[in-house]
Image (tube, rainbow over all chains, first blue to last red; front, side):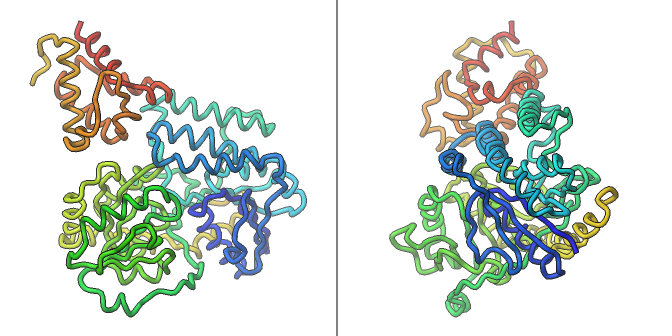
Amino acid sequence: MSRYLFVIPPFFGHVSPTLSVGATLLARGHEVAWFGITPLKPEHIPAGGSYHVPDLTEYGEDIALMLRRQDDGPSVSGPEVLKLALEETYLPIARFMRKGLLDFLDAWQPDVVVNDCITFAGALCARLKGIPCVTTTPVPPDVMGNAEETAPKIAEWQQNLIRGLQEEFGIQEESLHIHSHRLNMVFTSRTFAGLDPAPPHMEFVGPVRGRPNEVLFDWERLRQAKGPKIFVSLGTLLVDIRKAFFSKLVEAFADEPLTIIAATDPAALESWPENFIVQGFVPQAALMPHMDLVICHGGFNTVNDTFVNGLPMLITPIAYDHFHTAKLIERAGCGISIRYKRLRINELRSAVYELLENPVYREAAVRIQTTFREAGGNDRAVELLETFAREPEYAS
Amino acid sequence: MDAAVTRLTYQEIFDLLKQFITDVIGEEFVEEMDIEPQSSFTKDLEMDSIEIVSFSEKIKAHFGKEIDFTGWLSGMDLDQLINLNLDQIIRYIEECQS
């Protein structure tokens, strides 16, 4: 049996798949811990696992500032988001973690460190301590594309920032070590990610699952609902634009012959049309098989839930990597993308009917569903981690 | 239009680019904006990378090979991209024409 330490950022979309994989590792008798910088609800931690936050008193204000800055993401431009992500988010998180993580590695002595792709301290501290490291990537890789050719100055800026961070950690190397070079597990399929060939250390394990969701839902109302059923979610972030987004949906679909299941706090609008079922937290995975279409901004857990069920998607990218995901969806043919900022009511309505009535989108979604199933999910992820723990030199 | 366009004035280039922007992002969104030479692509016009690519294609289709707009963009660093405005593009096109 081995000891695995997941090093995670304070963003639930990145944390969630590690909880699923960790639960399967625990079920197979391994020891599993998580290390992060903000509190996590105890019920999220799989039974038998533990979660550790170091003493961060000296960074208290900086952490609060970094978290608050994330609210600006949807309103700033693409190049500014790059700066916000690297300079004001990923690098600071690595600095907040460094000392506490080094101490924790000494104390807990994991056999393998599993660092999330934006949680650089995991890979860097593991390198300093000589512990084998695996990276988990919950989003489609290659967001930057071929930046070295298309935007050489931006690629250089990125590399210099990372080399600077490595120096702060005491790693004086030209090559970059924020991710594992031996095994990088990506929670989508190679086909969907459109990376062919992909680097040999990248393993596409598909979506992982296993976290129970006990939230109640009015299933009887859903059973009686008329017409095609459309699930709409904006994920856990993006609170500010909820009202505007759902107002547009109401304008487009009030009293249309279909039912909208909206995952949002009903207080977002004063009143809702009869064909809208609205609830703050929903049992998303259980609901999906009953749906005909999904509308979302491109948060990756909802994207995975959608294609696991072979459903077409209307994606309305807002910021961050949503645009990259939107491109992948259009390339795969399993959905239509309309940028949120340019969303017109009539276009929204016609896109939804096109997706519902033209079978090509659903057929493409079913093809992606097959690639997700074949990727192996939790079992494949755990098999890779167990092999890696036995022979990290030769893994992958 | 072919590459052998007659030399355009500053104002003519501005009007042409304004038309390209309208084609790319849609009239109703442009109506809400006040497009000026100082308008920045990312902050004021809120153009994303896909829209900037369509805009580049329109420039290419109009001016042909004499203007390597995409090549010019790819030489920029992040701050230059963030602050890129119409005036800079008009001046770049003027330079290429001379």
